[in-house]
Length: 338
Image 1 (tube, rainbow, N blue to C red):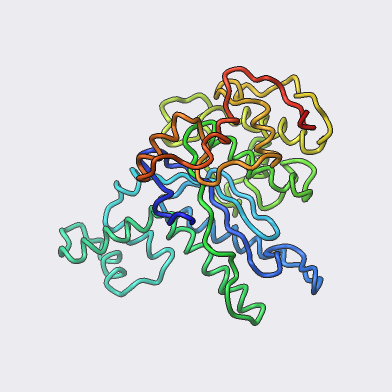
Image 2: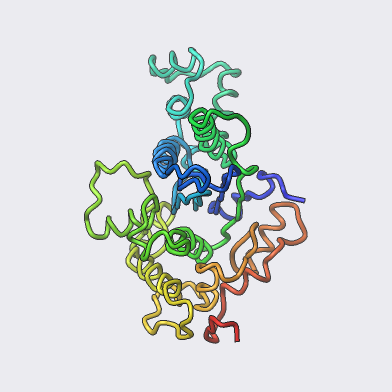
């Protein structure tokens, strides 16, 4: 039996999560409908714009995303400390950027109140603060408007999404970067692009474009987390490591998708793989989708115990398969399985 989403999130263990939401209707969302021949690729813009709006409002940082034909992937970080630091007026301002809200909210914002609130109002503001750092509310605010708009356009009613979203905890740096690479290379793995930087509606395109200084401030792409690039003072607010190493990781693993019969690991192994103690074979298996990993947790085996305790379980399912992603000394990799 599946676990409730609230039992899959443990902020004391990790703020990073991999989220997946899939369409239920005829297996298409933003691509070509095989029955009618209609192209729905313009709907990817709906999701991208909505995603950008929610990232600006919620205490949820976007690490990577990919909008596919019948599903989308997100890698996010919940910034609880930032949410706790918001003033009551800031909480309401962010909430009103997503919802219409009652009149009293607008009055507080317009009057710029700095005095103490009535206890009842204070409790309501704290409830909104909690919602603004909730993945369930984040995904609800992302999926529901898209479903309503698509149903209205198609002239139908009923479910648009295949149940609730899937959530996978990312317990350490290696798991975060491996999940990001998996998401960024989704278009390459699906045959939609021949290289990471050629994929549209994907965070990989943003990172490669920014590296080439082609992504200006006027870009309408959702804001994604930047890398610390060696600045350890900013490690809490940014992704670990230099961005160039991550782009090398995408390029390296992407080449195994374009050459699936190759049995030789590229000699120019990205330094970030060794620095994080990742197994080259495990990274390739995971990012290329050749091996199924745990859907509830990804990270080193020793981190699974803390996550299990936080979630009130004896163990986290799939931690042994997730351990294949890490090794002290890589033993090589044979894509044929021999």
